[in-house]
Image (cartoon, rainbow, N blue to C red; front, side):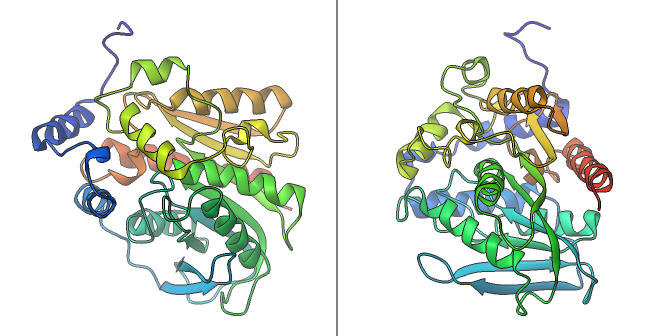
Length: 317
């Protein structure tokens, strides 16, 4: 297999062909409303149905720009103190919300049997960088304080997210390492994250078009979020990696930002950070949210949960 003909799974190719035939305009030729609606429609069509859970409850917490909407997922009405998973959704900090990732959050809660709290942070361009990160940090600190409204007592925080949310999962762990919350981050789970500068990486050149996330879409997100790429809150590779918690990091071989995750994972390994690195061969960006259209993505997603359970067991007090 040459670099010019990368390995693509049959079920992945079927979805890519279907999307190509649909001929939707590029995201930068859509209005923000169209782009956001299209993202929700794709996940509604392509992801597995939401799991039925004992608890799916909307909450909110104070934030720097007003109240931050949250959504609690749990398999149990009541539970003893333990880790709480905090989820940050993808979408380049420009699109996405609680509804676009509802199905995935129920999947996490179902498999992990832990409470999951999803954060509906402010979006750019209405609220450019670092608004989203500030909201994610404020919400995570609130959750770590085990407020009565949450109805769960956190003994530790697991930060997790996909794409932009994967970036946030790393950044928030760094922020809480610098200024501790009531309980620590015990595990971070960045999924196909932008962790290091991806500008001149081979994966950006190889996977610039044709594999769901494109270089053009990345430029759209970058322009709208207006992040400072000299700031570790935008590129966490620039931050202090020595205090990184145990990590499960997943990438996809057909993702233009694949190498960003690889670079970050290698840096953690060189520091001796306990790490599980998973690369999904023949898979695209957003594989966690396309599990109905691409059946093989379910096993990929479940492998992340298995790694999370392993790491939590290894580092349990």
